[in-house]
Image (tube, rainbow, N blue to C red; front, side):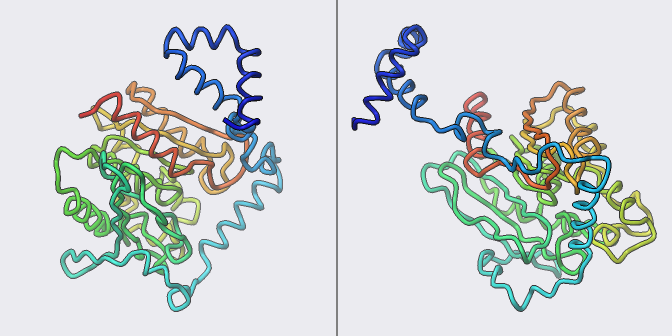
Length: 326
């Protein structure tokens, strides 16, 4: 133990004598001392997650220019014609190819670094040629990540399809089943934004064991209406066919389930792409009515992102398994 650790130890001992004694009664002295030292050495960012998020996006003016300007900027970025294919080498992140009928989808499969406890399916966000994809394996979970290069300008189809045809969803689920070789192996889903929709849609459909999402798009029909019902020349309009009813209804899917997978959802309250009240909240309300397990971290901000992490997702899924091993 170095000098810093010794100082932290004595401070923890003096300041938390009664708490330390209580911990010792429960955990034993050795474990109680270890926990106390770790607590004393933690930084503000480790003990107060709110302190390390994008505080510049907190409490922005939600009535006038700030949120509306952010929303307009995102919309322009989503509808612009991208030509990323030749300039990108992201396909190297997805070296495997799965054939389904006369179509194919690229994907990656990363084994757990240690003993595997299950399979996590990772769904990336919109602009498929921009994102970095899964960069490292999990400690205790195998990782499967499909690459959605379908949809408008090949930027993504919400892991569902195009023009009212859900062929991508069928392909993704066939891929998952081909890699999910052990029926006793638990399966989990995670994703952000477009990938949040994919994780929720496929996770609920497959009856997975848990879902971890950031800033998910929940109501695709509402997004299509936002971008104009008659317009097909944008990412959302390209999803619909002759009828809006052909677009998947995630809320109806969730409401029809007898049991829903445990959910952890992270989002800004006034997310300029998926306002919480129109998306995440409506799904949480369904969870609440069904008395299903969910956790939330909703920041008082206006940003399309979240402060989630691969490490937190693994912790959440591990807690699910620790409670119900299967």
